[in-house]
Image (cartoon, rainbow, N blue to C red; front, top):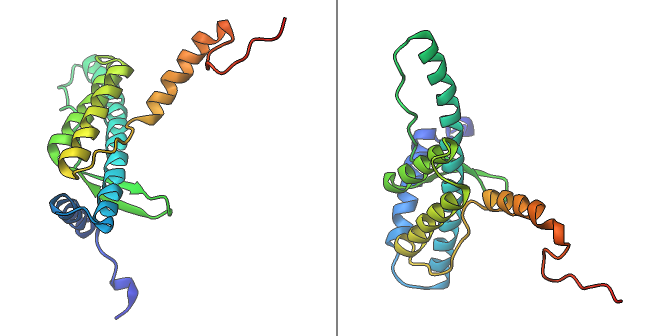
Length: 181
């Protein structure tokens, strides 16, 4: 058989992603191999959450533009954007894989991204909310206690904004030494 006919369709790859999530969630035991599978899936889920948050914010921005145009033209309003259970995530090896998360998690983080874009939620509240969701996934789906960090890009942005505001005293990192007198 030719290899060009051996490629899997996106629908099949998504089905496999859901099966993989379900399989890792159902694993029993705590062997090194099982823990490795859980950690890997948790990292993929973290990337899914981050990407879904961004997707919610970007799609809300586009929706707001369409909404304004419809209001100005007197047209009926389109429905709000909806989330997707699957995200295409690039792994550290440069390979792209489909990752699945259940609708409960996806809908929550997508809505948080939309609320953040509408300025109904501060960056810190968004970070705390998505972090709580990631902690739930790690703890309850994959039986992991080691925390992962959600929305690192937003944390970095907040730190940069805080650093710019706090640079006036010259001692922002706590490791600066006073010059000798």
